[in-house]
Image (cartoon, rainbow, N blue to C red; front, side, top):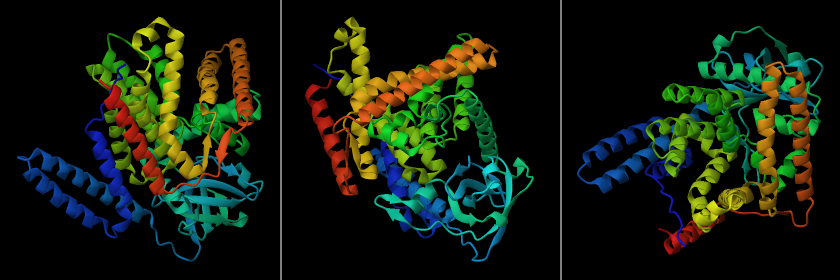
Length: 497
């Protein structure tokens, strides 16, 4: 028996060095100092061209210093010295408002300095009418993000990951609507906001389909990345079944969108043009879903996959994943602390490295003779690989381990794929003016989604469905990953080719 040995690629060590630099950035009080040191290190590295090993080490050090500098710069930009008296600010609502018992919570961007704020507005008949994209004027005290920690959850770091520079509690008499122009916002934020306004209209159309509320929440999350309609109980059911990734837009969802777009715009005679249109469509969908870290990672990798296919190069590898990580972390270094970013990247890295090893345990000629075996074994190895990669982080952040994750994924992944295709079919039938086909597709979509929810509820009620109360330290998590890497290495040395 021989298994395939996956290649790591030269960019993976660079991405690791960049992450280490970002992790150490809290120690740098003055970020231009890091820039000066990095420039000096670059000069020294260039002088080491006669010694490739030392030059490689110099490149790694330069990358670490880059992460140190970018991370410190980003943190210092978010540390605003807000005055203690009330401020009058013009804002644009940049997120879908969430209704709480006493407050309406939302994200807003100041039109003057483009600082992102978290607002808690007293809930009443007026505040319940606030919509994304609208302009507001508030007069309230803006507070820096307070330092609060619950277990391994660091509230300050979480808010910094999202780009917040402050938060404010606004009472009913402290705000009013205001006309505004989107031209006051940066181009990327302006574009993102327009797409999110279109997403709001699409979700309103979902509500007109008269679908069960829980099914509606799952469909909105899976197709448009909007989780505001999901209740906590349903989120817990998906998490305890080891299928929380179904609700977070990621590679599965982007790949299906990619395949559908290929059917529509793939032209052999104009392959470059078709691939460019595919990439633009993928990023339009990413903007529509809010540009979460997992969707940005997936869109980046799919874009690289599409563009590299023009040169018939290897398209999916640890190198591609590392390149996507480098792009995202240079754009926003604090993304590294986002749990979604960490789980998304470690899951894909585990699939890239572990899946080929496990998949090779059953000889290829046997899989070719039995197609059902090839499909089942592929699903099994991908699920196991992703679970092996993410389990330590899940236990660290959330304190549980789903024991029936393999059974849950066997049942849910085919249904999730069907949900995505049915949702696309519903929109196509609706836009093409086929009401009868649209009604059939909507009914099928609701039935499949409800069935998926019921199956996961059943799995959540099975004996020992979830091991709770797990508490791991950072050192224990690192030790677990070292053990996983050691076992993988020994396995490859024994059976690799």
